[in-house]
Image (cartoon, rainbow, N blue to C red; front, side):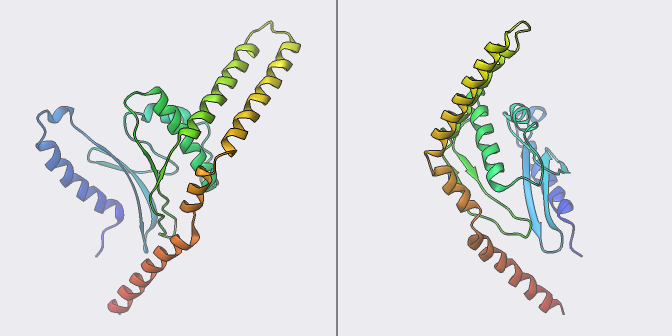
Length: 217
């Protein structure tokens, strides 16, 4: 009898944790975090957040690492759930990563994106230069903070508010034009959502499953 995905993860993680922690000089201070997305023909798609030997299935999104605290602050109010398109998810990831890397000195390095579909299709891993996202994010927050400093004044005149809103709209429009001037992000989204690439991998899984069923019968 085959074990459910979660039980498989828990078993493997318990062994890994025991072997790894035992080899550490300071076991009390050691630990690790994992995020796993798994698909099987029988169980479908599931996502798990693993902290040390503990395994928890989660809906929506999860974060791990030193920038987790800041990532939640940036993502929580903007995440709308399963109705988000791939383009919306990538935009949320890129702008959030940009802010995390800018504010936390321990976070950095290259950014990589991969898509695991509900039907088992998996994209290739795409490396992404998020420098344009950093520019867009920084310009937006600079404009937003400038606007906030005006409207937060309890005695501010309406004419000053109107002028600040116009300046904010102009700043956002300029940032948007700059963002659209590069096609790198759009190319990445197109690669991640490439139906042909996903279909090839999905067909492989389907053939393997049919063969197993045929052998069993």
